[in-house]
Image (tube, rainbow, N blue to C red; front, side, top):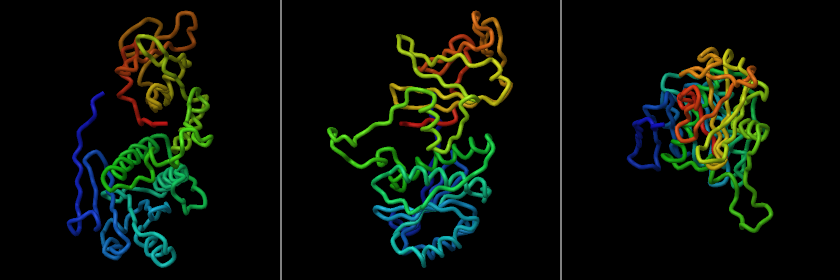
Length: 300
């Protein structure tokens, strides 16, 4: 699957990365501001500082994740009550599109991710609660995915990156552990830490099979095509989970092989016979291109 092109816009207020920074890109409806504490008063004059959004207070070894319906009001409070931080990052949208439910979801995601990083102290006592629909969640996951890319690669915030989640330890140390996902339960448990809540009975799990033509194989109930359908593909070679979402009634369950509809098993007519090639994410029997329905990819 080709990676779509995008253009990233970076505005340095004082001509350096030590000043207020505005980051936007064409693949994203969001905008991101980064500012040293010394320039916060100027940052809060921006119109976007009055929008709904999520923010991070940062120091070399500590982070606080928060949200607000008016960012500048909350940041002013932290300026007087929290002395430890020296940098702030604001996440919002270009046209103030977020709702309370949106920022609840995004805040919870980043709090959970920050708490996994044992090199940083997370100043949050606990994560929040959120209530979003499936379509809203998919949209917000896409927003978060792009925000994570920009945080790490443009403004050099590493606290949420995979490489920063665990402290450096000797390979021989008994505390050096790696995440292993080998079944549906461990996959769903891992995804829940990323803010993706899926019910086991309402989604399909498929792990990568060995062999010359590597495929993800599963036999979900044929009724799944009539409902919003989540599929988790576990690529254990690359330590990656793919979240696939297929809207209800996009396809049919058919008894004979035909292009663009899923085929039921001859010996078990109540289930589908799915074999998705790793190399191109195309189903062997239906020739459906599953890559079109990939919502997100998660490294573990």
